[in-house]
Image (cartoon, rainbow, N blue to C red; front, side, top):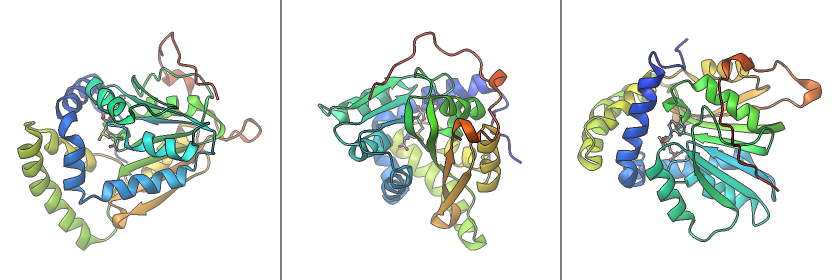
Amino acid sequence: MLPVTAPNPERKRAYVRAMFGAIARRYDLLNTLLSFGLHRRWKRYAVEVAAPPPGGCAVDVCCGTGDLALLLREKVGPQGRVVGVDFAEPMVRLARGRAGERDGVWFVQGDAEALPLKDGAFDVATVGFGIRNVGEACRALRELYRVLKPGGRLVVLEFSRPRSRLFAALYDFYSYTVIPWLGRALSRHPDAYWYLPTSIRGWPDQEAFRGTLEQAGFQPVRYHDLLWGAVAVHVAIKPRADQEAGQPDSNTVQGGPEARTEVRS
Ligand SMILES: C[S@@+](CC[C@H](N)C(=O)[O-])C[C@H]1O[C@@H](n2cnc3c(N)ncnc32)[C@H](O)[C@@H]1O
């Protein structure tokens, strides 16, 4: 099973944060070009599956420029509350700009591994193409577990493992030739779009990641393949108190900010 913790998490955190900060302005354009616009469809699907209740509270972690948070905002409606969290300040700034004057959606700078959010506050949490980039993904999953209400739902949209050999071969060619070349030319970052396919190959497949979510305390966990498995949407439930299947190991969650953002419904 591939590990979800980087060999040197501290170094990975610093690299990822600086890299996403540097490419933030061109990030949306590159996403759209490199995925042929499919990322928008996948995100709409993830939000459909997340199904936050009207008037409910949702959080999108590793929110980037705010795509998922803004879609969640449409779902929860004017009575609901949505928070987007990202540790790269340029991403948060762009997300705030896109939200404009909309009520009920906030973007805050914060770390997925130590969320500045209250325990048990959210009906739904989403992470889109973010968990793979976190230094210690298990810590982030435990944080997501903590901030969800009992019975709350985590939806993780992430690259995964293609099922068809033919498609996998084409996808490999595209990932290791077109993406780094086009990504470098358009982002003007020397290696951001080399990091992308490399980090995807280093990430667990659908089944292994399901196990990781279960280890974090979620139960049940199911997933849906998109694009023949190149992308997967995992849906993980935080059990209600009377059906706890296994609490996450709190010893592995270290620290956490003193100040916690309270989201009132
Ligand atoms: C590939 S982008 C995805 C952005 C957005 N969710 C989307 O799907 O378009 C990954 C984002 O995760 C953020 N990120 C990575 N590690 C993080 C961490 N530990 N805490 C908060 N944000 C993090 C990066 O800054 C970046 O904006």
